[in-house]
Length: 231
Image (tube, rainbow, N blue to C red; front, side, top):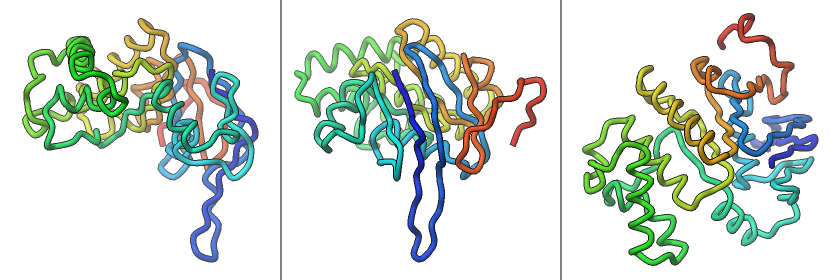
């Protein structure tokens, strides 16, 4: 499903070079729930952006279903994200001028899906994430956990095969964060989505099929959880 082959990412900051990722080789299978862990600046978000086609590696290659992203045009990358990838952000990225249902159905409307069909799919997904009673509410009327549930529904609206989640519990209290992780896990199991989740939270490892540890842009050999010390 997802394969990274000797991927590196280097940013030029003036006269300096910042190595965000180096020599990363990974594979993730269909339906797998993979957690990326490591300290801030270790390359977690960079890796997600590369897998999502939002950035390009300095060297190496990334494959989605055997398709090399480096060979795709910008339009082809946009189509790939539209069809196969759903992204959940730490800061929700909801539009404050739209209500819950409108935020959820927006990706479909931008694809040219009819308003009636987009509305139907949004209602189904909002019910699935426990927000059927909030569909007409404004974003500012929601709690942080409810906003993240809307963001998850929006990420799923086009039925992607891959979900990329960047610190999805970072702005939530521990109980709400745990609820969001349970929701992502259940969605992954029910629909066989591949989930790649970047986080600092040790709680997330309880739901992972596999934990990948990053430090200084490199993948570490994953220690057992019993011997793992949080960053």
